Image (cartoon, rainbow, N blue to C red):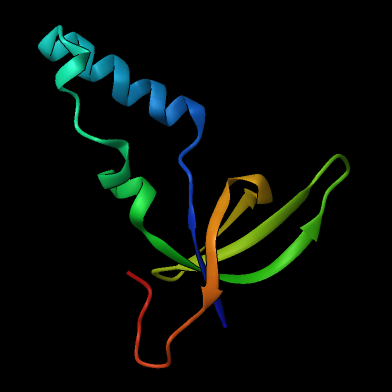
Length: 86
């Protein structure tokens, strides 16, 4: 089965940026986005679904199904047999 990582949506990134700016006032000290939990979680790819205007990926992790635009997927690879969805 294939696994992938998903980039957070723009609204999620914007909320994080706004929160950091509100609390500290200085965005130059903001942590790197590559370490963000939303950016580092792995999801199992269940299927691809064609919508009216675009194609979505059905992802499963921790027992939930989520529909995500395929443009947000990255780091797609075959899952190791011993690895679990993190």
